Image (cartoon, rainbow, N blue to C red; front, top):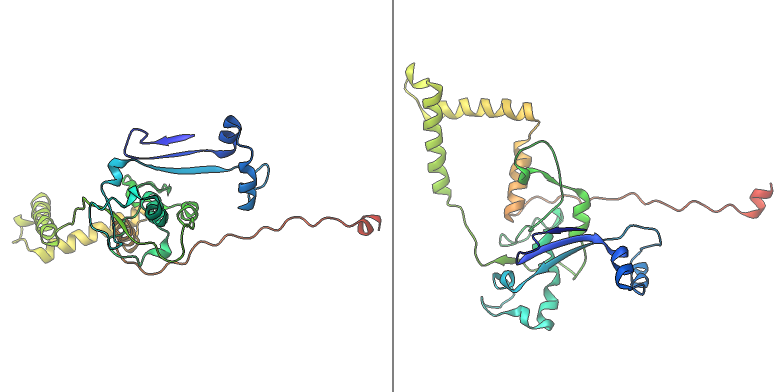
Length: 243
């Protein structure tokens, strides 16, 4: 198996469930797996999220409870939030993009490498969306978020962008031939970024969508992944074989 952050307050483990059951002699679990569609010989991987009290103390639920209510100490209340806790760990599939802004988008995910050095911009693997759709409850989950939340200031971002444009104009030396201006520098920057996107095969709109998804913002609906149904081979009848 594979462990992720084993010493942390929030950790995860991926492992071969059938092998684990053989080691601890839990063969009776196979009947439960069969009820879920598992068949003998199939690979069965368990993805397990593990929450310790440290991370639970930082979570608050938009459920009419106040911060510090310690809802997780009551098993009858905590069991109602299995879907939210699962979504906090693995994220939510694309069809949940309309969830409130407070929704957290997942502590871990499986992504598709595309050569970008910033892995947060990698697209989510469609197989991971299947993991995200594990049904714990009906309807949309109620948002879970950590109490410590940073909210970027748009005014501060604009000030930083202006400072970067000033530095960019200085490095280009455009001020030597004519007085620099923000529209002039932004146009030059736009042309350079367009060339960079074309060379890297990037799409600005998709990058914005992914960044918004990671931040828990509302997004346009995206159709879920559909898997082709594979039928079992038809058994040959005796009369057909005789002919």
